[in-house]
Structures are given as C-alpha cells and as structure tokens.
Length: 256
Image 1 (cartoon, rainbow, N blue to C red):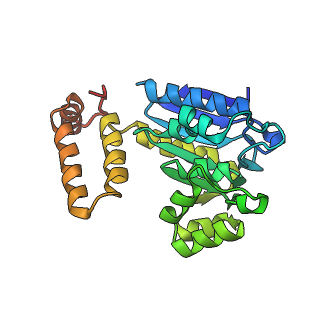
Image 2 (image 1 turned 90 degrees about the vertical axis):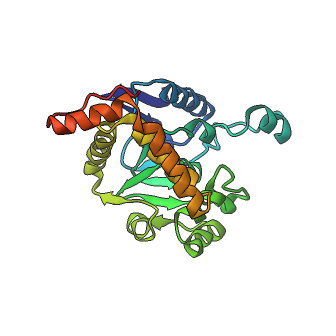
Image 3 (image 1 turned 45 degrees about the vertical axis):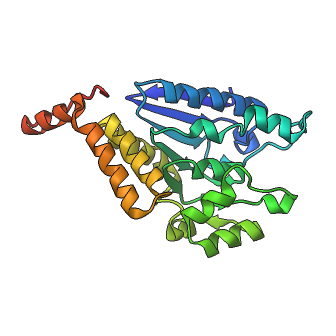
C-alpha cells in the first residue's frame, strides 16, 4: 500500500510509503489518504495523528506527475462534485503532527501546512516550486504560507520557487523543532504521547479556539474561548481531572 497506517496508544501514525518516488502522491495514495483521515476523524480512540514519510530523503514531493493522468473532466465538474482531494479530509479538531524527513515540496509542504505541529530533521528542505512548472500551490500554499511565516519570506518562496533548509525554516517559524534524522520519529512519538495524555475534549477545544480565533477580532476570540471553557466546565473529564490531581494519580479520560 502507498500509505501505511497504524494506531497505538491513542495515536494514529500515517506514513507515506513510496520512497522510490520521493513519497509523491499518485491517485492511489490520494484515495487512501482520504479514507485514512476520515477514519481518524471518526475513531474516538484516536486523539492525535503523526504524518510522516518513509526513509530520510523525502517527506513528500507533492503530485506524482508521472503517475497522475490528466483529468478527463473540466475543472468545474471536478471541483463542484469533489472539491480538493486531500486537505479537506485533514480538517478536524484532533491535532496532527507533521514529522518532516527530507524534502517537503509542493503538495507535500501544503499537507505539512495543514498540520498543527511541524517538526523536521536536519536534512529537511521546504519549497512551493509550482511556478517552475507553470502551476500554482493551489491547495493551501498561497494562503497558509504567508500566515505561517513572515510575508516577505513567504512571497520570496512563492514567486521564486526557491527552497529553504531546516535551520531557516526554524528561524522563520515554519517548524518548531529540528533534530537529527534518527531522532525525528522518537520526537514525534514524544509529542504525540504528551497530547494523547491530555483530556481529549480539552485538546480539541484548544485547537478550535486557536484556529477560529485567528479569524476574529481579539475581543471576539477571547469571548469565543470563554464559551468553549464553559462547555468543558461540566464535563465528566474535568471532574476526573480535578479529582485525579487531588489524589495524585493519572486521570482516566472518557472524552465526555
């Protein structure tokens, strides 16, 4: 299968598995990813996901242009029936961690931009190179990259197609951590475990408050966050959290 999928300790591990093709996305990969993200969203046992690529050379280089045939339909027919093929399936309140090993180019970087935490190996390189092949980073790149890093840096990347390395990505805030390649999977597992150990409803609410608040005036965002706090106040998990703290034990979350 072009994508490996497993669940362990409330963490879903989604691994692109086409290393000979730089973990690029062929039609089978795209279809499988859509099914996997739908399962992640549905499965209440899953609290966080880790997206990575097999090997140390490439996270994902976007569309496999050799394996992806030209569409038989016009854009309007495809868009109005299906919309985008990948990123809408990643929209959920459960966090997603991108563990970026090697190249994250084109659609690969766009998938990483759809994740909540991005960590990378020292060998990682990032770019939206679509202008070099008369295309456009049309999934989310033109919109999310200028929101993730300083606009001047984002525009340089978008207009020149130039790539940046892991240290520059760390400097401008595109990623949060850089580690040696052999340490990347363990760091992703560590962060996923820390998230999975927290109250699942609180984690979802924190993500929702942060992301939706970005589109609100500050006072509105604070008010919305307070409303989410109120929805958590009477949950079983909040009572369990307070009781577990007083009893000096690990809480047993139920997600309700």
